[in-house]
Length: 114
Length: 111
Image (cartoon, rainbow over all chains, first blue to last red; front, side, top):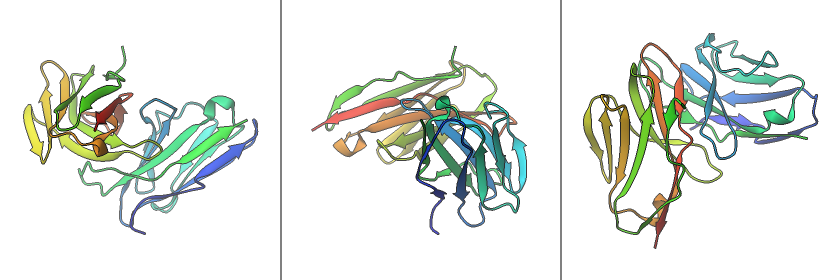
């Protein structure tokens, strides 16, 4: 596709359920970032992949959050035992890597935990 | 102190005026600075990046960086109603992949 895609676009989960959010990057993009954006706030860094290697996961808020990118393309952010405070928009962004700084954001997944 | 600070606004300017958006950051080692625009309900899109002290112009947009004062600004000339959005400042430190975003400034351009 032409841009970064994310699915699902909207997800409603009951507290305690596990969820999986998917990001399909632009073809050939080496770098992949996950962000969490709460209402009225800026995106908050969660984790970064360079190809399949997770080089920085310092922003993951707890061990309930896990991200993977096993083949260096599609990435999945998994949240176990969801809590109400996990409600936010989860954004994926990718760039070509190699020092380029132009991140392209996907449309986001809006997660609501009831 | 937040790592990247912006006035949340809203900043209201009349159509055709210059809008001035400001951002301060706390990490003196920061090397890369970015302005993103985010329309309501949409994802951020990059407007400009700046790496050196001084001004960088791109069309109606000018980014200004002052590393000594740890200050980045964005000027939008001839503001249009379509410029109404939230403008996010982002900073990346030296030797890190992590982008730190401010909370954004909401700009309203009044027709």
